Length: 274
View: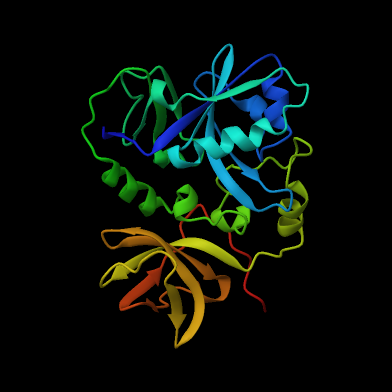
């Protein structure tokens, strides 16, 4: 079973009697579902419904832990703290207390203080936090290839702060949005995008022939721009593409490379127009 440390991930700690209700009104998913052995994947949005950050919520008896991009932890603490008002909740950067890891292809990871199946897809494996260093037999790069093969977005490498909408990144099919829990910041645009069928682009896996195009490289079909490149590694990548270019066998270009998009089994696309 591969186990990898993820040094570019950090942790936000929430404590206090109101921690659950406080976070519930701010993020895209149902925080009440987080429990020992069960993680929740959620996003923080702008009031206009655009992505700011996403994270895994892990629960202990007296606190919630948000496993997030380490570079985004200070922003998350700052932004969330703005909404405390009179709520009994405290937030802090607890990244220095944990080693973040992922495991896939087998059973529960060893030496983990908190572990839960990745809530997005069974094939994604496990997420875990350990207070002591753990033995890894895989690298963060190998985990990156694993998540690229599944078509899973990786935060700011694939989404744009204050620009991306959740449904472009698969948050609906991957269980990152609750459609029943009630109001949260940015809910109106997220719901309107889903129920009015407003989505025009999706982040999908692509195989890359040639040099890997940098993030943001325009993707072309017959000279017309149809999207842009996002994260990539070793011939595999993700690209934000228009829905009308996702037909089987289509070959696109980005920089000097050829891209072949692949719609993963978990992704639900609208039926083609008659």
